[in-house]
Length: 127
Image 1 (cartoon, rainbow, N blue to C red):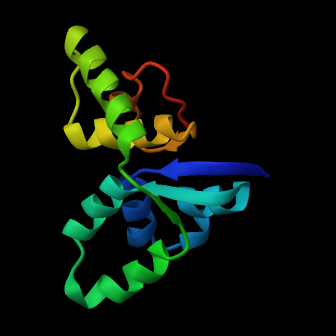
Image 2 (image 1 turned 180 degrees about the horizontal axis):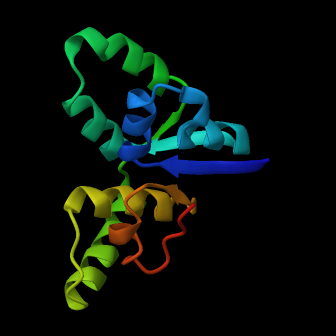
Image 3 (image 1 turned 90 degrees about the vertical axis):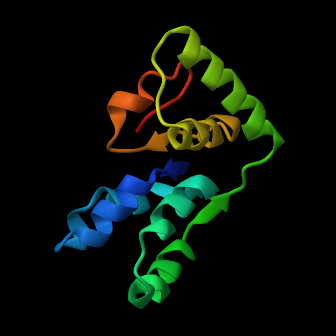
């Protein structure tokens, strides 16, 4: 079993919407990794769209994962990533830069369905 992975918001959302939760990427990651993590930014992205009636269920889901803070190391990594993408004219959403930078600053791979954007970032390991 591998140690830790950072999970993007889209993985949580697809899991939430799935009829068969056992077949989702989130469930597979839970079986493969000892520790599931989420960037504070990705958690924010999810909770912006959560209906009040579903909030408690989402809280229970996120209580099972480690929320990684947006700290100084992440800020410095995000600064580098932003500059790289801008220089190469491959810019992506700032929230994606912040999520990727959280994974990179913690030396962890990122699980996402949005590979097109995240593959632009040099040094980011994707699941």
